[in-house]
Amino acid sequence: MSEKEHQVSRRQFLNYTLTGVGGFMAAGMLMPMVRFALDPVLRPVAKQDMVAVAQVKDITNEPQRFNFKVHQVDAWHESEEPKSAWVYKTKKGEIVALSPVCKHLGCTVNWNGDKKNPNRFYCPCHGGMYEKDGTNVPKTPPIHPLDVFKQKVEKGTLYLGKAEPRGGA
Ligand code: FES
Image 1 (cartoon, rainbow, N blue to C red):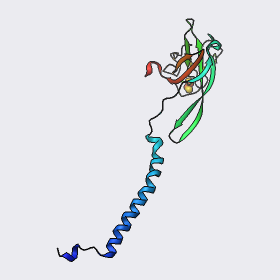
Image 2 (tube, helix red, strand yellow):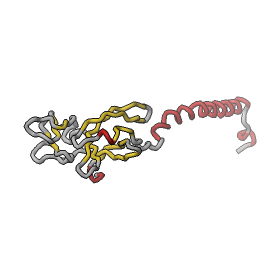
Image 3 (spheres, rainbow, N blue to C red):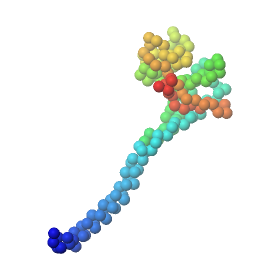
């Protein structure tokens, strides 16, 4: 190669310089936008906090429905999600908190919802039934028991977390 071919003309120098500076500035402007767009997706999912739901003294042996709200962060969207739980005390005094969501197709179950089947949870959508402890009644549509809420009691208040399938499955 000749000496002349290695030389950079003024025009080429300007082109390289402007391209480099332009690229640097574009990257500087785009990076915060990309980071802002991806941040919620890349952030680790926060565990659902326990929410105060009821006073232990108000919980009876008969299941009662307690409504509460859970703060949810879903990528870019934050909301207060309404939830409810069927809560009762066993004869031994243990607190049971069941999800009202039917395990068949997701309708809401009601305690004593069917007069012909007292002391059971009843799902009006397709006649699904569950025993008081949430066990699904055979020969009705649901094939799994109701989910159970994680719970803790502090200073006389019942806190509920996430509802999970029995056995954590
Ligand atoms: S949704 Fe409950 S029985 Fe079908």
